[in-house]
Image (cartoon, rainbow, N blue to C red):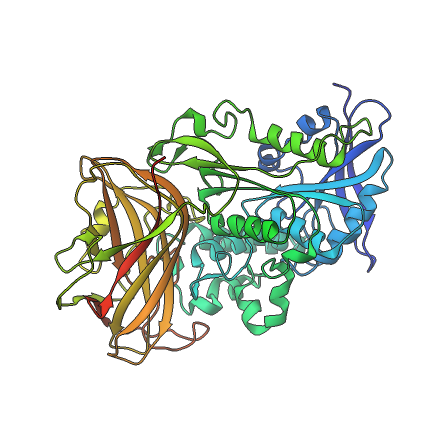
Length: 559
């Protein structure tokens, strides 16, 4: 099938009269064909679009493809407000796409990140023609990875994303004022380029000065605090039972939305829906085999998938089973599968469930001698102490991040981080045999600080035979406490799948910052929206019989 016809900027009128525009790709012949719809704010002809969804490849597989600029973006009319209109515009667009010439009336949606969420929002609006969605690397709760994590602001993504989207906003604003356009874009670029050199550190973090300077819509953290009800405009969590559709969800262990992908899958399974899950070793923008400092083997590449073929072809096959094969025939139903990439042994493994019921939550205790032990403390041990200075925070080094290019995602060398005096390190002896950890990880920390508020960060690392430590997964929790009073804090490190090989060691870092991925706690208890003055905090971490600080790892028994 080679005769593909393309219509550019096809108009769709929304319920309030706003006109959105889409490019439509039709296979050769007369159809009818099932429709694959994607709605994104990044420009429907951007090269990134072809990487995530090649519309020509999809048309050759027998789908009519519709790619639409969301409201207020590029060729579409209206004002740009992240998230606000995606539910209503999604409903209207699905109904419009289903009625296009050549459509068989069945619509599936596909896309990643923001345009993974536009699928969920459309599905929640329940257009009758929408039959399936395939959201990739997208969140469930925006306060668990998009806007905040553990109460800390996701500054690393919020600032560059908002500034980058501002380019189209400023272009529209100064469409008839060339001098104004040049000046505004120049200032925007300067702020973006200066982030890693100090721009991330502007205060207050919760009302970021650069957004006000350029008068730009931001990712949504600030608005969600002013208008809590508005946050519903991109929240999927708690609403999965309203979506009676099959879903194909894909994510990466080093993706900023990795837990959201897993949470969406488990919620849909819990609601009794057909749900498929694929989790690779990938980051948000890298679905290849080399992520961070690690080559996971070509099997990990999304174009290979351990000899299963391309991930996009797996999605197309799934859509043909749910929407039809292009000839009006619906194939056998898909009951949903689970495909996980297990790092360490670097193998894909098929499962029937997530989380794995055979995984056993196992406590590894943080001990005073710096060891990480299965044995809990039996006698009193002196607490660990360190000083946390918000003006000299622990720098971000890898992880599930989406930031400016200076901050690479994935597993990176932790030597410089672990050499700092404000980072506590706890390590097992060399392992006598492989230990698989697959599932959700959490740290239980008994700790105290001398101020009214602080952060606790925990990071799980894999230390190889040569002593090189690389991060696996991490998390943060922002706490308000009585100064000097020990309290129990649970840090959610999200989920992973890795085999710590025999001869390797398992390591845990404990500290109070990971900047600029997360904003700094200034240790004063003041609201993030107004806090500009910092104080140094004196931190204590306890490990004794009454206060056994530990990390809880879901250990999978060897078969």
